[in-house]
Each structure stands twice: as structure tokens, then as C-alpha cells.
Amino acid sequence: MRENAPARREDSSRIGSVFVKRVVRHKGLFIAAAVVSVVQAAVSLAQPQVVSTLLEGFQANREVYGWIGLLVGLLLAGAVLMGIQQLCISVMAENVVRDTRSSLARELLGMSFSNLSRFRRGDLLSRATSDTQLLRQALIQSSVQLISGSIIGVGALIAMAFVDLGLLALTVVAILCSLLLVLLAARRLKSLAVASQEGAAAYASAIERALSALPTIRSYNAVGTQMSAVQNAVEQTWDNGVRFARLSAWLTPVTSVAVQASLLLVLGVGGFRVAEGSLSIAALIAFVMYLVMLVGPVGQTASAISALHQAAAADARISEIESVTDTVASASRHEASTQPLPQDTTIAFSGVTFAYPDASRGSRESDRPTVAEVTFRVAPGEKVGIVGPSGAGKSTLLSLLERFYDVDAGSIELGGIDIQNLDVDALRGMFSYVQQDAPVLAGSIFENLRLGARDASDVECREALERVNLAYLLGQGADGNETRLGDQGANLSGGERQRLAIGRALLAQRPVLLLDEATSQIDSQNESLMQKALSEMAPGTTQLIVAHRLSTIVDSDQIIVMRDGVIEDIGTHTELLERNEFYLMTARQQMLVAGEWEQDVDLEVQPS
Image 1 (tube, rainbow, N blue to C red):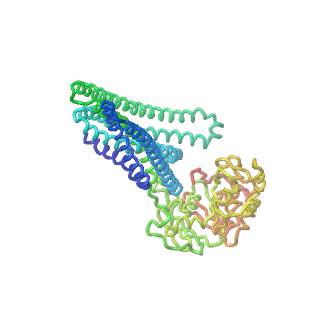
Image 2 (image 1 turned 90 degrees about the vertical axis):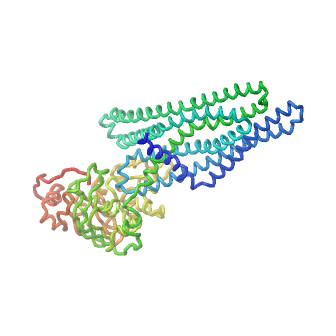
Image 3 (image 1 turned 30 degrees about the vertical axis):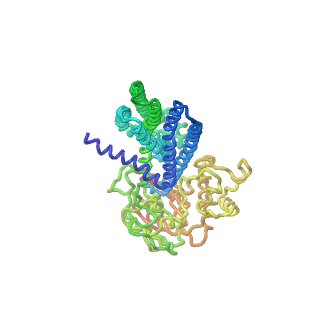
């Protein structure tokens, strides 16, 4: 029993935190609901006394019309107050969910990639949608039951004590027995609630994984295999949900039996006492009415406990995201950033070493980091190419410059200032970044173009599309306007997505352009157009270009050759042809220079 005590205290603390942490921001509505509940309880508790007085009036042949009118008024007032209370609680719950979803979205969109890689995408979507919705439902249900039920329950017990202490003792014994059983069963509800929600998250992850690779899955006739994984998640969710439902359903009959037993005891004992003249019929009816009022709160206790445990489980999953601490933040991890962005855009890597965290790479090999002791310098306005086999760490350099990750050792400077001492949002505002997979957001073409230039006019957007040879997409929409893009740009080819990404970068006109295999899916004719558009960028624009196709970087001011995470050589195209074997063989493979070549270069494919 001692081993379970900390767990019980943790559960109680978690349930309490759902209210303290989430509801305290909207204490005005909560207090209003509590005040209305007090008034409603007083109105409800007055009704049995009015009925008792009416009965006594009938027995004594007194005038009772006024009491009848008062009873009707109390019934109407109770209904109105109940509606107001429900409104306050519902609005409060909606406000809580709004704040929680906003906070969760802010955390997810600002979280470092190191931390994001710890979670499955479907699991994150489940936390942001179903868990917050569950929190809303639980808050509405449990708040009404706890506020209203507790006030009416306590008031009914006090009123019953004034009517007859003996009958009250019988009632309390029966109810305490039922509550004890409910509390014992509630200990199991928390684990089942967590398991049920994790099962739902596993289902969402399985569906998201399958949909993201659906063409490949269908091409390899692997729909059955993926369906098995989805079905396993469905069955797991169903099993946990049924077990939770069974336990929750068992609690309600237990409380119902206890309440019915107490009612029968009261009627039996009370009827006997009425018969012997020690209790009036009016008092017995009033006591029974108070007992009926007590039935509601006691019967609702079980469902309130179930709802609270579900809310606690949802809150725990949401809080796990909100409590993540990022080393990559808007301020330096050493001290608050007060340094303005430098005008000088000189980029300097000095002894940079970095290895991906365990969650994103499966294991972290400290003796072989992704990049090691990388040192180079890029002057403002220079065009620098980065080449090497897959897995050499080329793309990682761009990610470190953008501070998607922080370096493990060494430093990266912009204009002589360590980028960790610069505001990360302002730092990224210096870069136009074109990824190899060229992500496209569902929506319009112009919305995608304006990601980096929110104030760009329609005319400027059209000019950007013309420069990347995508103007033909305008006017193809169903309404005669621009084409609407599907999820991940499904209605565009790979080359079109890359050209759209380059158009976005051209429109942004930022001082530094980062291209990560940005033309790998573009045909040779359009690649020439892209090269021309990039060469016409604003004077002084610095370009860092990761490339496998040397034709895109032969005119670079310097070319960095990377092998196994380290810099093997730096030089111009001509210099590297003369002294670097890997670069020469690559150039021969791509027929940039004459001569025979043998494929004896390590081209082991690894994530870069």
C-alpha cells in the first residue's frame, strides 16, 4: 500500500492542476458560475420546505395560494439559474481550450527539431486536437457536477439534519459505502484513460504515416501490410476504450443501488415513525425531497471522477509538450540577446562539431559526429558551393546556420557575432532557405510565395512566377484565378515545387540565400532559367548552395568538398579539378570534363 501512495498523490495533484493551471486564467467566469450555483442551490433547497408548508396548510385548511405561487417561482428561477450556470461553465471551458490550443500550437511551431523528433507526427496531432477536445468536455461535465453538486449536496445534508438526525445517519452510512467503492475503482480509471488516449494517438500516427507515403504503398501492393498496422492501433484503442467504459459503467449502478437502498431505508423507517406519531408526514416528504436532491450529486460523483481522470490524462499529454525546454530559443542560452543584427553578412564556421540527437538518428555516435571541426569563411556577396557524397553533412551545415540545431562545439558567426547571441527570429530573417524536398502548403500559390514576403503585391508575385517559369499556373483555378494547391503540393510535380520554392526565395530578397539541392528535380531547360534568375538577384546577395550537380556551382567563388563530415578541400572549380580526386571523378561522371572515370568513390547513402 505504501508503494501506491505516491502514485495516488500524483494523480490527485494532476487532477487539481487541471483546474488550478487551466481555469485560474478565467477565474471570473468560474466565480460567476460558483455564485450562480450558490443561489441556485438556495432556490432548490427552499423548495422542499415550501412543499412541507403547503402540506401543513392543506391539513389545517389554511390559504396556500401564495405558497403555490412561491413554489412555481422557485422552480422557474432554478431553471433560469441552471441555464446561466451552464453558460458560464461552457464559455469558461471554451476559453480554456482556446488558450491551451494556442499555447500548444505556439510550442509546436517554435520547438526545436531535436525535440520535435522525439514525438510522432500523428501523436502531436492527437494531442493538439482530440486531447484538447477531451479536456473541454471533461471541464464542462466535471465543473457543473462539482460546483453545483457539492453545494446542493452539502445544503441538502444540512437541511436533512434539521429535519431528522436519525434518518440522516441511515442515509450517510449507505452513501459512504457507495463512495468508498467509487474511490477504489477510480484508481484504475487514470491508467485506462491514459492508455485509451495513447491508443488514439497511435491510430492517428499510423494513418498519417500511411497517407504520407500512399503512392509508394500502393505501388508495392503494401496496402494490406499498412492496414494491419492501422488495424492493430484500432484494436488497441478499442480494447482500452471498452475497459474504461466497463469500469465507468459499473460505477453508476453502484451509486444508484446505494441511493435506492438509502431511499428505501428512509421510507421504511420514516413510515414507521409517522405511523407511531414521532414524525409528521410533511417532515418525511421534505426529507425525501432533500434525499432526492442528494441523489443527483452522489450519482454524478462517479461520472465526474471518470471525466476528471480523462481530463488529467489529456492535461498530462498536453503539458509534456508545453514543458519541453529548448536550447534553441529567441534569446541566447547564455544571456539575453541585446545585440542588433550586423550589417556585415560575413559567415564564419570555426571548428564546428555536431551530432544529431538520439531521437532523430536512432543512436548518437560521439566518435563519429555528423560534422566535425568544420571551418570556413564566406564573404558578403560570395557564391559558395558545397559538394560531397550523400551523408557527408552538407545539409547539416545549412541547418546549423539557420539554428534548427545548435552546435556541440565550435561556433558560427554572422558579421563577427556568434549566432547564439542573436535573436533567432531576426537571424532567420536574414536567410532565404530552399529545401531539397521544397515543401508546399495547402492553399493558393500566392500564399506560398508570401511566406517570406508577407506584404508582396499580386504584381510582384506574378513577376516572381514568371522568373521561375510558373506563370502558366495562374488562371488554371476553378474560379479562373490562381491554382489551389493540395496537401504537400500534390497537384504539382517535383520540379514545379522546387521552382515555386525558388520563386519564394526570389520574392523575399533576403541578404543570404541557402539552396539545398534546390534544382535536383528540375529539367535542364528550366535549370538554366533558374540559374539566370538567381544570378540576377540583388547585388551583394550571399549564396550557399548544396549540390550534387556540379553544373549549378561551377562558377562559384569557392567550392567546399565534404567527405564523412569533414572538409576535404576548398577551392575554385578549376583548382579542385587539378588537385581533388573526388571532385575530378564527380565532374567526369557528370561529363563536365573529358576523360575516363571509375566509380571507386564511396557513395554510401546516408541522411545528410
